[in-house]
Image 1 (cartoon, helix red, strand yellow):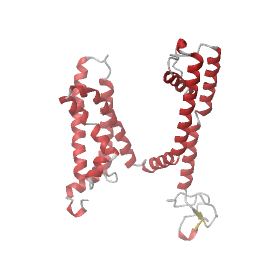
Image 2 (tube, one colour):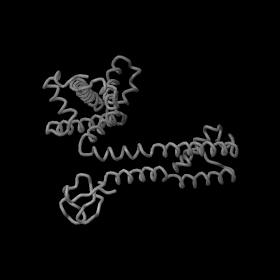
Image 3 (cartoon, rainbow, N blue to C red):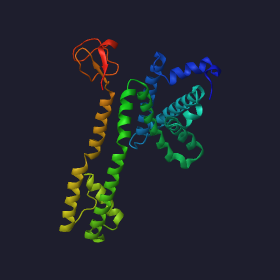
Image 4 (cartoon, one colour):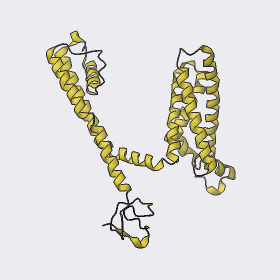
Length: 281
């Protein structure tokens, strides 16, 4: 671990600008970074449109080179000024930073790596880091805690859905058979997933009355369960929002539910000081 005494003023200054958000320079850097990320993603999207004239694709190429050069320098500077370079490199955002630039260099030496250029779209995830460091930090943490608290319920729900789709797919394969397009159990499970999620591509559909009755049951099941994950996350989100509320009660009006950083009681307007607060049991 690199001690703060061995770090140069330049490293400290760069760290404050690139990793911080309290300073004016840090906020400006974050704003420029968001603009460049969105612009680079837009170039990737437009470059994939074949109907755009060829000479525009040349402009996209040089723009991509400029973006890649900037993000490469930024990645190296992050490593240079980070107090723990190894942790940054192996972190989620460090890996995203690396994957968003390396495909461009690989494509110069390995033509087969052209398909990896799509990894440049991962740059969009870098906006999450900027938003996470800015004013949206508490909201992001609240959402992440809600998702983490509901992960087991969602996992059980997903296992139940997988079991249902496997059962429905197997039944439809037995009822309809290859002559009606259900040529295998995996393809029948695919139909069950498409139907239970109410997408309904229509590429295969039951032809027999019994198959259509089973399809109706699958559709009803889809409507019944489509809101379950939303309800799980919403319940955990409400629980986390309650936890965000202070456990302190105003001693003047004897009412609670204040934010932790509240200056005044939201019920009676009295200034919340040490002598006007009591701990809720």
